[in-house]
Amino acid sequence: MSRFRNICVGTSLFLFAIAPAQAEEIEVIFGKVKEYAASENYTKAIEELNWAKKELEKAHFKKIESLLPSEVAGFKGGQANSQSAVGITNIEKTYKKDKEQVKLSLAGGSTGGGAMAGFAALGRMAGMMGTQPGVDTFRIEGRTANLQVRNGRAELTVFLESGSFLKLEQNRAKDGTTVKSIAEGMKADIVKLDNYLKGSS
Image (cartoon, rainbow, N blue to C red; front, side, top):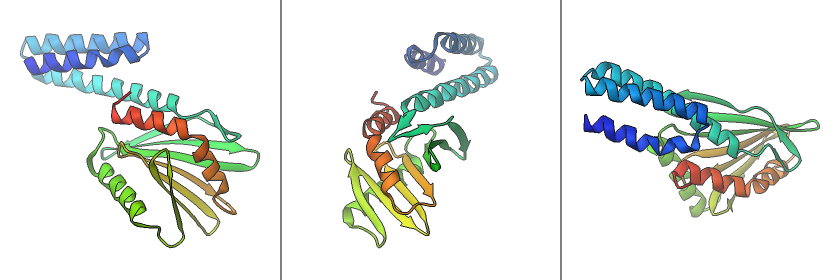
């Protein structure tokens, strides 16, 4: 029972960063968790915890969406979309300027770390060991980034310290100038996003 109490107390710290209406809803859910746990109805308590997890994931997505710029390098962003599967969350947002279009995607483990963090670490290591043929490797605010242009498609990947990937993709690209300018324009946003995903902000 103390485990449920610790979960409820720990999660209450997160509620201050959520909109009041949503925070109130989560508080109600955790109130039910405490009631069910007190009566040893652990089946219902776990069911309520699962609902709380869904609400927190919604708040998590909204927080990430707020950290993505609405406009960068003259490109205006559209609505962000989120998908989750097998423990991996992918958030996408399209930026447009005139006839140009760039897709931003952020992929990582929904609970942080795991296999995605391992892949990110390998990407950073590959960047430090040297460039690959056809790949321009550089750093953005200390984070390794790879830029590849092939068959009219530019793809820039930033390996975040949190273990997630931030990727910019553009079709019908003559070179990587556009995606690189967008990444450079997002320097401050990338740092804030990465710090949030690391749980340090």
